[in-house]
Length: 60
Image (cartoon, rainbow, N blue to C red; front, side):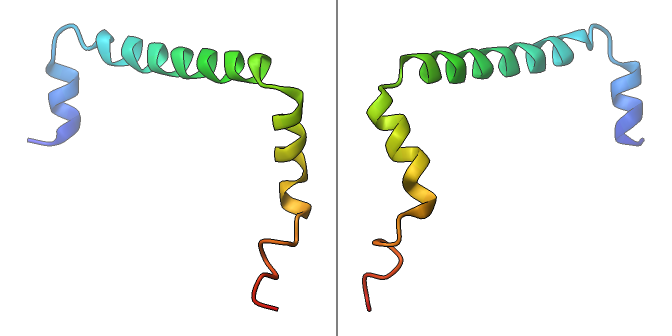
């Protein structure tokens, strides 16, 4: 029997979609809360990270 047959024959399969949505929603909320609570200095440091050559050229 194929895997798709297990899903089509299973009763109350809605919980998979609901749990996936809830997981995404909780993750999104955590990221949004962290973004609003973060200090401006931390955000500035993360903004400048790609342009910081000190970590790349340490062996030079």
